[in-house]
Image (cartoon, rainbow, N blue to C red; front, side):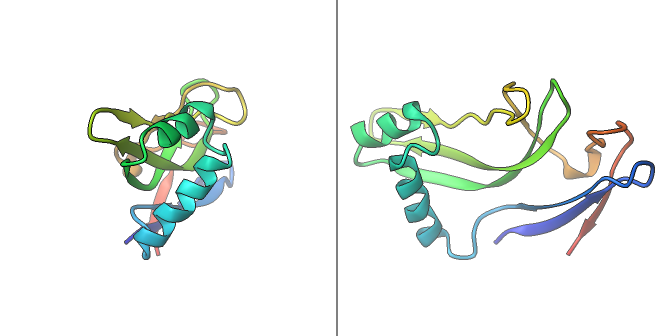
Length: 124
C-alpha cells in the first residue's frame, strides 16, 4: 500500500503531494502498466523488452525522484522487469531538462526545487 506525503517549503511557498509505494490493487495496476508499455508510454526500449520477453514479471511501485540538473521533484513509477534470462530497469528522465532523475532514498531529506531549503514533510 502506498503512503501519501505533502512536501512544502516555508520560505518560498512550494508545495506538492506525492505517494510512495505499491498500489492498493497491485495486480490491476501492473496490467495497466503493461498496456501503457505496449502503447510506448515508457519508451521504445521498455516496449521491446516486454515484447521480446512474454514471460516477464514486473515489479513496480510509486517513488519520488529528483533531477540532479534542475532540481525538479517528481512522482514516478519505479519499474523493474525480469524474465527467465534477462532483466531490465526502467530509467526516469526529467520532463524539464531531460537529465536522468535519481530516486529519493529518504523523503525526509529533500530540498526545495526553487529555493533549495529543506522541505517540511507531512504524511496523510
